[in-house]
Image (cartoon, rainbow over all chains, first blue to last red; front, side, top):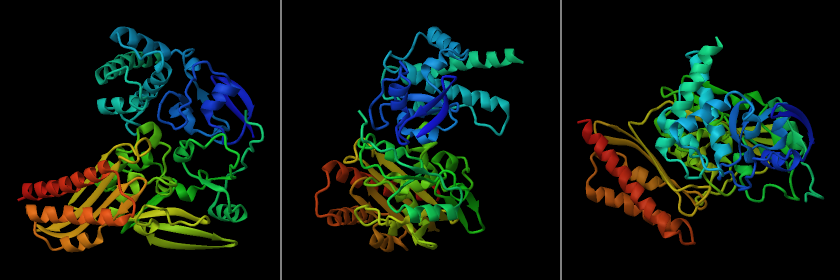
Length: 170
Length: 296
């Protein structure tokens, strides 16, 4: 099956099996360096990517869902300005995910940060995530390297930077 | 590595009649809802016997939530996250809690209502909750140019051991819930059905009472791989009972449920599941008592 999509801001045309999972496409066909997950059951949480700006487990997305989609892996995300909000939040709080889950947890944080931006845009949009939601979402990645307080602190610090960025933009 | 592996054809019907026609032409094709369950199977990819895929995501009728005077009708392709956005006024508390406690938001965006009812080999918490809420499902049978549509009580979709009774050419298109609200609902779960199905138990319980007299008592106990228990006799027995329940009445309910579990299957259930089920039923009865006493 031929699929045209955008991966890390590059337009790519792939010929892959229609049911091949996105994580395998990224590892084998695109050779994304930070994609090391192969739990094969969607429960390690190490294969998170942003698909059309929403965090997804790439092992649960088949190739045929990628037609015209925008995929952003951690490597692509590191080249955006939004990465610096999280990088600075890690530095400020002194807590950061371990190397094994760094990419995945960072992208989950980013997906949560995007809901704030949306909530600032108008009352009908998503609300800012509660502390419970932050912990629940990050726990999608089963690595226990961060405790709940650290997750919340990182998110709050990053959210502060993200809001400032938004103010400066206007 | 993947030599000889066929790429399945993907059909993307845009209307209900397209769907019926594709399903008739390709009777062995797999209906694809959210894909979260199918893709989490260990043998999903690569495999040599992959069937064609009929993706249901582009049929608009399946993605609608419709509210009538009497019912809430939910399309089978509505995701859990979309359901949670419907709001507390419309969604029964029991259903809301069940959806919230299934996976995380990132995964819930992909799990569909119909998909969660039709998982092969594993029952999630949703069927039990919908059974407790006495939901109905619309089943469409694709028979050549004709289709047959019927509404079924949801509990008739499974046998006692939780095995799905849908045929290959049948498809769930809508789920219907009444607007009658129970005074008391209780959902409790332990374990992860995908990681430890042999240890996981779900209990969904809904009860209506008026002036401390039980009018409706609806319980469903689920073991993901081996049981969907709807103890109808206990439901009948409890109707007309005065709240709060005495400790003898609670013991009797627990004993009857345990007897039904043990007689449901010729094989033995793991002791962990049995113990959890006992604890859940007992705690549901105590919670019911606590609520009824607090309203006095």
